[in-house]
Length: 229
Image (cartoon, rainbow, N blue to C red; front, side, top):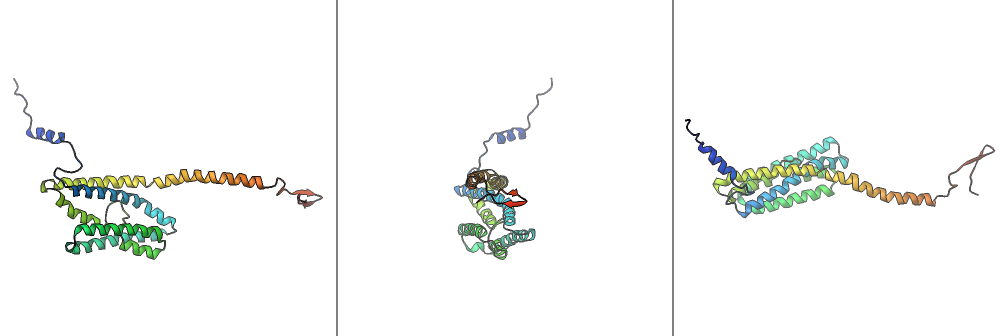
């Protein structure tokens, strides 16, 4: 009689690991870990959203392809320079305060792009600010968050937390890029319907105000005669 097949110990252990309920945060992670992942998710969604709409927005303002590329290059160059500067000097300041200041700078950058429409001022805002022209985060906030993450979890769970950090960012960035088509859809459907609703009564009013004989020309004796007395 053949001996019963023995189960490899690794199979049982992997089954036990697979049966564990997956959680958003690793075991033992602090409340700050959840805050950092939530902030990363929101920012990644905004990055994916803006990365698609930014070139469209700049083109609508009348900029040529070269100008759009120059503004995008200025944002990347400015983010790289600011990240390098923070890497050299961040140890002198509390990281939480740097995160708040970087967030305020990001908000001011968005306001600047909304209200400034000249090329050279936009180049300056793009370089100094933290606007991200790509779905991947290249802002100064990224290294600050990554420096804080290891402090929110045990050494054993550190890799698991960073994996979740990258996963939620990639997923939120993809969803943000997908949602970037909503403004065009709303503009094409709802605004067009509203414009037709506005224009139709105006056209009917114009037809009502016009005289039936207005603009009619009759020929009598080879001469054009205006029907109005």
